[in-house]
Image (cartoon, rainbow, N blue to C red):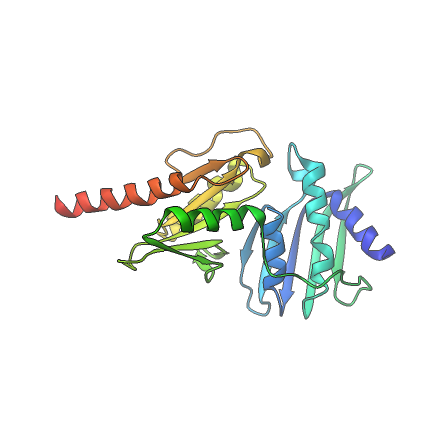
Length: 244
C-alpha cells in the first residue's frame, strides 16, 4: 500500500503520462472513461493499447478533483497482464520522471467492475422510454479516427433503417483544445455520425468551443430530446439534399 500511495502522490504532480497496456486493457479504458480523464487512445504494434493522459498540472482548474480521479486509475493497471507507465512530474519546481510497470510491487485494488455509470444508466433508461423508434446499445466496438481509437458509450440504431446509426460519447473533464482536437480527428476520419455529450461542470480551462461542433452540453443528466433533435434534424437535412 505504501508504494501505491507514493505512485498516486506522484501523479498528483503530473503534467502528462503515457500508459502502455498488454492484455486485459479494456477495464482500464472503462475506468478512465468513467472518471472522465482527458486522454487519447491508440493501438500500438506490440501493446494492446496506449493511453496518453493529461495530468493535473496541465489544467487550469479542477486540478484537485482531476488528480484524485487520475490517482484512482493506478490500482487498475495491476490487473492487466503487463503495463508500462511513464509520467512527467514536477516536484519542488524540479522536473522529474516516474516509471512504473507490472514488475514493481504495486498491488491491485478491488477487481474491475463492469463499466457502469449512474449518468449513463439514466440516459439509457430515458432514451428507451422516449425514442421508441431507436435501439440503444451499450459500449459498441471502438472506431478508428485519424490514428487514435474512440470508445463510444452508446450506439443508436433506427429500428426501421439500420443505416441510420449514431455513436454517442460522454466526455468528462475537458478543455476547449481537447474537444477541438477530438473533433479534428473525427473530421479527418470522415466520421460525422458521432455526438459528444459534454459535462459543463467539468470544464478545466478557459476558451471557446469550436463552432459547428455536434456537441450537446449537459448538467446532471443528458437531455434525450436534444439528442433526438440532433439525429432527426440530420436525417431531414440528408433527405432534402437527396430530393434536390
